[in-house]
Image (cartoon, rainbow, N blue to C red; front, side, top):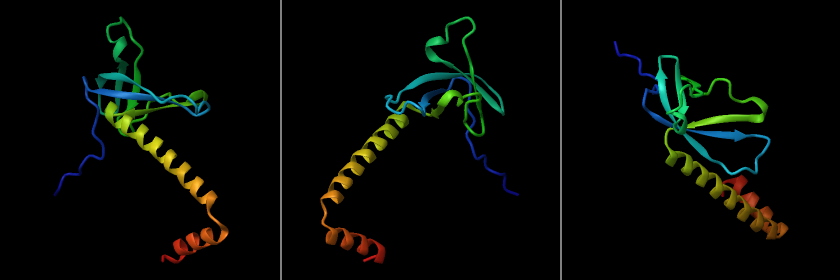
Amino acid sequence: MVAKAKKYQPLEVGQRVWIESIWYFYTNRDRSVSEYEIVEANRNSAYVVRVDNLGKDKPYRNRIDQRTRKIKGSGSFGAGEAIWDSKEAFEADVKRVNDTEIAREKVIKKVNKMSLEQLQEFLGGAIDGG
């Protein structure tokens, strides 16, 4: 009998993660992340402390569900949080989102300049698969 593979990689003490605050009501904010360290972990939860608060007596700890990777208690008042395994992964996502936005703007400008015949030909080709 083959052992069932875990669908998730549990967070471990000492591991670093980056947490992004997502403000759904304030979409003009620049995206940023803060570095956290896992200070306690078990099968169900991992507890993280912001790296610049590690030396404090009783720093605030966020609890992360090990299976879903969601921070417990976040998401109130139009805010949520996303967990990133590395700062590079976060930066790659920011770049992808920005590149997509620029590409969309270019396409909209190009389509707005098309004549009706060009637009119908463009859409007809896409619909017919030709």
